[in-house]
Length: 190
Image (cartoon, rainbow, N blue to C red; front, side, top):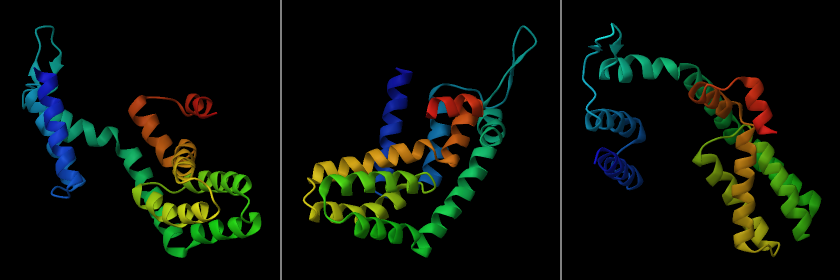
């Protein structure tokens, strides 16, 4: 029953965020708190019979959680700043237009060149905003070059995944949350 309640709360929070009735910055702490309540985690740390202590909500949500993700959050912040600078300066749009002019309207060459270009761009850019920004540039170009819309969308999504694999902000999150070493992560990325 606990698992079903957690899924229901998760879906409610997702719907509220999707309909823009709840901001993600507010929704995530609410979700963490609701899951802890459903899982019946006590508020304070509880002493165990063997002398150890069972962490409570205070320790898990307000002390341990933010400190465990601190380096990932800082890397994400700097990655967001870099991404915003690339977006504002128009570097990404210029690169895409130059590649398109260089390759011409040959569908196979254009789709391959744009896939590689987008993958490189997504290794520094992150987030839905950059996907929408580059998609609004690339998709019309590919469709006008007689590339099927489904193929154009797949190229955009695949390049997002490939570039995201090499995105340093993502690496920091993987290292912190999955407890991977940088060497192990670089082997997994290749």
